[in-house]
Length: 185
Image 1 (spheres, rainbow, N blue to C red):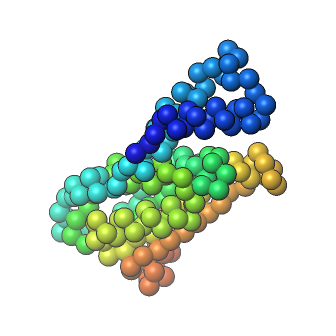
Image 2 (image 1 turned 30 degrees about the vertical axis):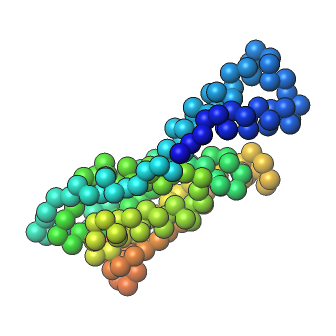
């Protein structure tokens, strides 16, 4: 559970550590604002995709389902700076499908944690395999990392792309090619 009091104390120490006056008008309420913001952006720490992915619909036949351009925002666990981009999720149903918004909710659950993009990609794929039990899953994330944009090498616009396959997608090159066709690439 998120401890807002500890966050407020930590933000106060951080501001003092960089030489700021925590009592000046612009900063007086900052520790509280940051604590409330962290409660929102790290809400995924207290969630699982179970609720979203347990509501399914029976289908007799279904080809590949692809939901692309799911915008997400996350926080790099190494620098606590944002990274953001788009998720693209494909799966081959095995008798059941999930509402499309549930795929986006699954992305949100995992994105709202201190995170690594590589780990986020795998967590989304694994959750779909666990809860939907599809024949296969393919997840691709494209993101820009503020830790590369505003510090270090300072390369704005650089995209990191991660890709994970499970089940039939791992074994079937034709399915992967169909994914790329559907993505328009």
